[in-house]
Length: 183
Image 1 (cartoon, rainbow, N blue to C red):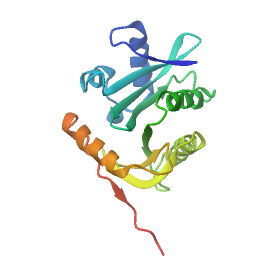
Image 2 (tube, rainbow, N blue to C red):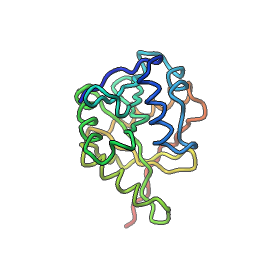
Image 3 (cartoon, one colour):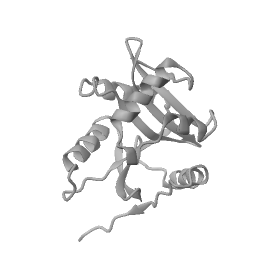
Image 4 (cartoon, one colour):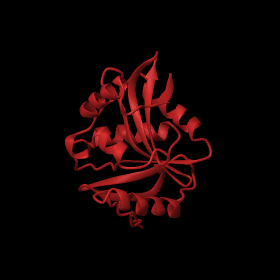
């Protein structure tokens, strides 16, 4: 398995488009073309996840200072639950060794119809070397848990990143907060 930059005008990008369509609901999905156009090549990595030379998924990673923000991560529905996601995350961590990879996933919520899926996603990231930071964000009418690959979250760096992100993607304005601890 390997990660490779995914060229914007390639047959593999068309396959990644199809994976994007199947993996994300319309309200959470941005086209890969929009993502390519959203930033410079130095600040955006769109990486194909290749297994046996064939694209099986992709990552979209925004690069800012020492933060690597995992904006999108998708695996073909035909490859899910086979360990490919865990292997791909390990390769991503190797690729960005020394940087803090930050991911957001829907916060578990007992009152939500997809809570079991939310718990599975959380457990996937925790099993693969991410730490819950204790911080949350809220956008698109959804609460997200912020996790990262270091036990010490660079909150100030992440806030600078979200300010930058909001300047290039105006409809993405996360509101970072911590929940009140109950006694």
